[in-house]
Structures are given as structure tokens and as C-alpha cells.
Image 1 (spheres, rainbow, N blue to C red):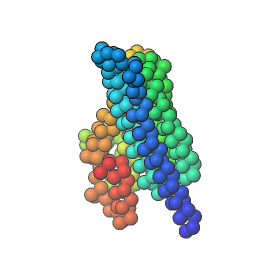
Image 2 (cartoon, one colour):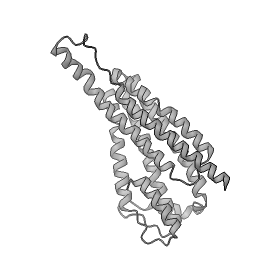
Image 3 (tube, helix red, strand yellow):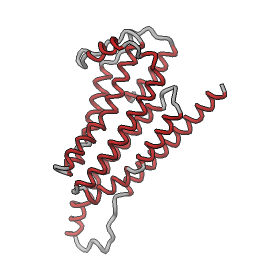
Image 4 (tube, helix red, strand yellow):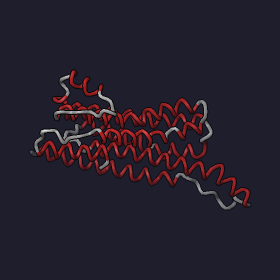
Length: 256
């Protein structure tokens, strides 16, 4: 009992530190937008140039970066809803937080050099690295929490073959967990796909490279709405404890 209390306390403290990192990172993003000195703006023409060449692109980049950070924060909300979180996962989370702290710097770099390929490559690689760290953490989480539910590979294959349009019919808790886990990994793959696309576009059009991250918002929205529509636990024969657990997990993933 003492060990469990200690682990729960450790998880709570890690969750608090993680929330603090995200709160600071989100706030610092806007502080990266530079305000010109009054000596630099000597006329209305110069001010218009500042708006067009710097401020307008910077505000757009700021909102894109803010959403990316917010999306990563949503991942951590799901992470801390799991019951078994090992020290290895907590360590990986702290490594991820260190990378999250680099996003304001990478965003400020884009503010000044968004027309340059190297700046876009640096930003895209950072987002890709963070996204892969989240996938690694959740793979370990699934292994630690649901190992006993993933023994029958034939049932998993059958569940995966069902289309979104037909919905995924999951007659028991094991298959339901497989379905909801697939939803989770689809969400985790969204920023991976967009960061890879951004890397490719960086060599063609740096501006398109930045805008491609808007695809993350679209993908996450579509995944959550379509999977939620096919997610049905009404026919499951569950205990009260299982219903509570699945309810918390669904709320974390779908944002109910």
C-alpha cells in the first residue's frame, strides 16, 4: 500500500510539473514576437512593411505553434489517465518536456526566418521528434496496462478490418480496448504525418511547409468525430469498475 501511495504521489507531481511546462511554453510563444523599436519605424510606410513582412506571418505561425503545443498537452492528459505509469515512462515524459521547451525558440526562429528552408526543417524535425517520443511512451503504456487484452491476434485483425463507415462492433471489453487503442494511435500519428509533410515541403515552399501543420488540426478533428460516432459501449457487459475506467479513458481521448 505504501508503494502504491508513493507511485500515485509521484505521478501526480509529474503531472503538475508537466502542466506547468506547457503553461509556460504556451505563454512564452507570444513573447517571441518582437515589438519594433520606435526608432525603427520612421513612417507609415515602414509600419506597413512591418505588418506585412513580419507581424502578420508571425501571428499566423504563433497560432499554429500554439495549437501544436496544445495538441501535445492533450496527449499528456491521456497519458496520466492510465493506471500503471512506470518510472521509465515518467523519465521519457521529462525528456519530452525538455523538447517541448524548445518549441518557443523554434517558433521565434521561424518568426524571423520563415522564408528559409533550414528554419522550417529545424521546426519540423523538432515536432517530429516530440511526436515519436509520444508514440514510444504510449506503446509502453499500452504494454504495461493492457497486455492481457492483446493476446488473440486474430480478433485484433478482424477488428482492424472494419471500416469507419460500418463502425467497429466490439462485443467485449478486450475488443473495445483494441478499438479505443487504435483511435489513440491514429491521434498520435497525426502530427507525425504533418511534420513529415512539412519536411518535404520545406525544400519546395517554406511557407507551404508552415501551413501544412494546419493539417494536424483537421486530422485530429476528423479522427475524434468519426471514431466517436462508431464507438459504442452500450452493448458491453461491464463491471462498475470497468465502466468507470472506460469512461475516464473515453473522456481523455474524445474530449467529452
